[in-house]
Amino acid sequence: QVRLVESGGGSVQAGGSLRLSCPVSDFSSGSMAWFRRAPGKELEGVAALSSGGTIQRYSDAVDGRFTIFLDSGQQTMSLQMNDLKPEDTALYYCAAGGRAFSRWRWLSNYDYWGQGTQVTVSA
Image 1 (cartoon, rainbow, N blue to C red):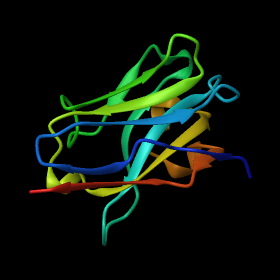
Image 2: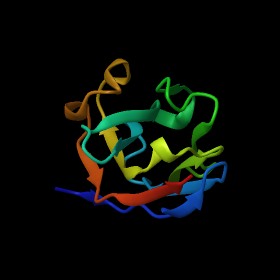
Image 3: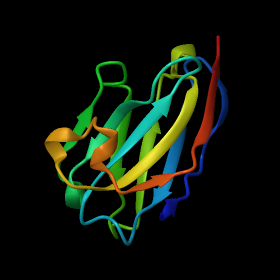
């Protein structure tokens, strides 16, 4: 199975910012997304991008604070995370090759996954 490679995780204080990136040059024809798994919780969809990067979707927990986007060359998908909160602490995964944008929260919608990058937010 093809593995994507995320980068940009780290540790910050509450209110800080981080940017996660994921090279998707071979997979941008399908929808793309970021998921996260917080300690003791299930994997959840955070944000999604339609094929070509024209439409975004966000979970209620991050709407207004996070921005998902594709660079102009469609080589890299990024997640800009601002005003981070301790509850954003999680292992973040990028996903690509999504078949149905309406099902962006479904794990089974995506063919390609990254190995995860840790984001830790301290109070």
